[in-house]
Length: 162
Figure 1 (cartoon, rainbow, N blue to C red):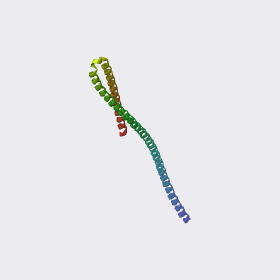
Figure 2 (cartoon, rainbow, N blue to C red):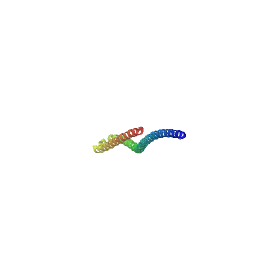
Figure 3 (cartoon, rainbow, N blue to C red):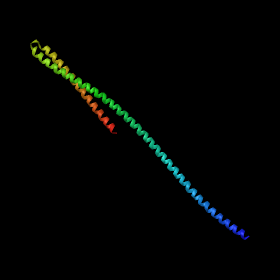
Figure 4 (cartoon, helix red, strand yellow):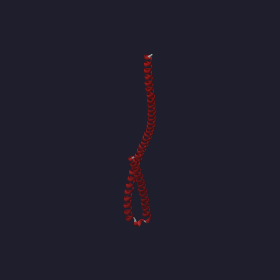
């Protein structure tokens, strides 16, 4: 009977210790579950942030590609305008040369043909005026092309600095 009493006390003590360990295990399990939930929430937040960053990166890359395309187009347009400007300046130079040569011819003709009548001189004056109009048109065209080229260069510089 005494052994039974000792055994019973020992079993009760073991049971008490087991219940205490079980209670500690449940508290630990509850803490670990809370930590797991918190970590899962952090992982979801990080995935959301990563998704936004990937989207922002894609948008930035698209904007860069668009900017590069605009830069190439501006370079092409500037090249064409430079060619047009060069051709316009060459045309202006040729017109100036023709005008100078024709003016000299007209002066000589006017001196030689004063007695032949004013009709010839008037015709030559009209031709000089027409050449001056052509020269002015070429100068205007050249100035317009120069302005367009400067605007494109400014756009190109602004786009390239981005």
